[in-house]
Image (cartoon, rainbow, N blue to C red; front, side, top):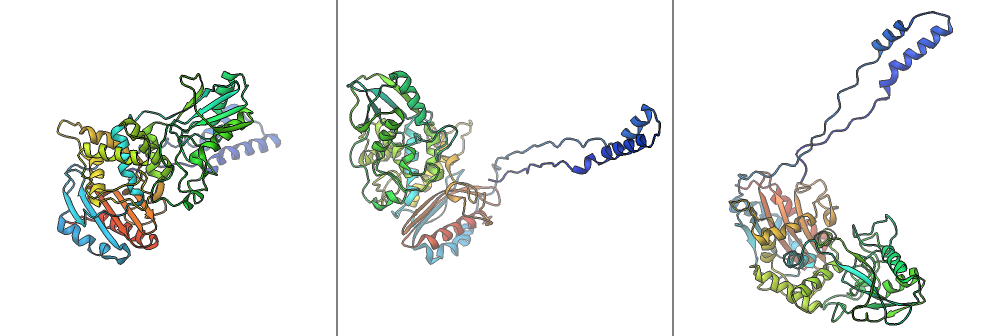
Length: 469
């Protein structure tokens, strides 16, 4: 949301030095002409020519909270405001809901219980489960242990796809990612540099490396990599770009790069011995920051990695099936209605996924819920608050950076996007012109993103401009 105060800057004018230069030239000319004068005259001339410096500019930016008594839009008013935008045929098969964030009152809905393909708004389910089930400060650890044979080390996947091959201060698409170089330095120091073989242990995960409904060509397209518990930069060819071709063998590729930097001759799949000596380890950014990255950039691989961590934390198999089961159970245990919802993955990438607008609206309301009379949030709302920093800002950040430019919703809409062939969605929050926070979920199936995404944005724009009383 735009700040209520605009910071002001100052520039130094080159003309501010003009009088002093003029005095110096005059003095030189007078001296050259043999004119004699005392120090008091020089001092007097200087004082009359040099102005006092301007007062320093004080910056006092602030963010003002929304007014608690901002008026709630009326149902009939919202219906009238949305009648035109929601009648756009570009929306195809359409469902949506609008709720007041403070009270949870449903102000508008259409087909709220219809299960539709969510695309990446499906990430909200898995990331909500992660916030509810995992320690927000926990980190995913990648380690190297001593192998059973002399000169052998084992790279043990700990579920972190953010480990980066970049060096020094270079940043990948994952801010704060651990560096392979740090791991290499530890292993060299602990092993004396005598390493000839690197094995890669991927036993942390089970089952298929791709979910039902995933398209194999999307690996080369940069949308996902086969799910293995260790990879470099999400298996990206270019670590600094969100969408770049990915490796079809991410764990082995990581092992080969480690071997290269250790001076080892070979890398191959293998297993770590029980109770093996740890030669080095590095840790990811905290879970809360990983979730923020998933939502900002709609990262499918990182979403699936965190879904598996939910499975492990709840005693389920760390696979696609186990992850989906774990997410469902965590959400149901926290009171969410999953009727009609079927998910094949945690990222929303599968063409088999189906979610209702009602569920997405419930998740957004719980995350934005107000504190109770004593100032305390319900436990689930307190945990889900960490979803909000990851929600892209319209016209400003993440997957909404290039949308809403110059429109009413710019800066006032924060929402998770979803885009697949024939499936487009938007779920998040918007502040009305009267200062009331609303949450919404809008889902469109059956039409092209070229026409569906602008149509969804127009709905959110209409909510922003809505006094609707």
